[in-house]
Image 1 (cartoon, rainbow, N blue to C red):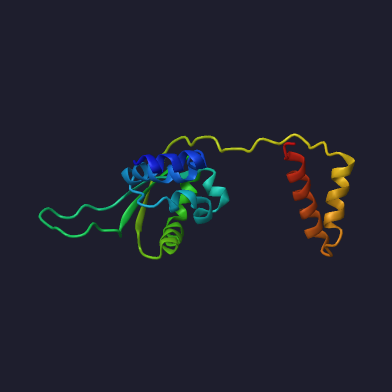
Image 2: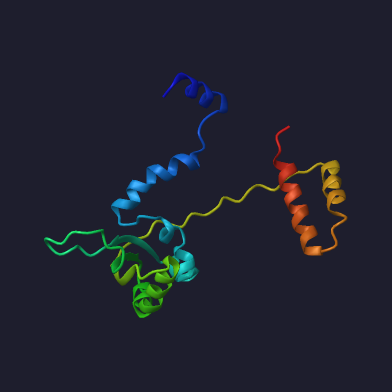
Length: 173
């Protein structure tokens, strides 16, 4: 890297984490058969919020080409390995055709032909920490009320007021 680029990078500060995570995680996903992380990030949308609590995609295994046959790697007919907790395996097995249809609909082509369920333990779901309540000064509270008073829709007005309180209450002065 040239010194000019280094100086430019230093003047802008550290690189955003989001730019670094993608290239680093891509190889890990590729080893598990996920050329794209879409199925992992959209799993709750594919199987629904209830089943996603008890299952997670683990690997996507594509069929091997017959010996001596060459050509591009097949991207259809894969088997999706899913880690499942407890009795959810029975429900997922029962819903297998619908789940495969939703996955293939998500990708837009017949990427998955079958599911393989693997009994296992999932990591605990991530929970957001509750933030402590804000202690706004009366002048800050009046600024929020004044800024949102012109909004006619009550729901929108309440949402904007809540956003304003969060922004003004978290601002470091």
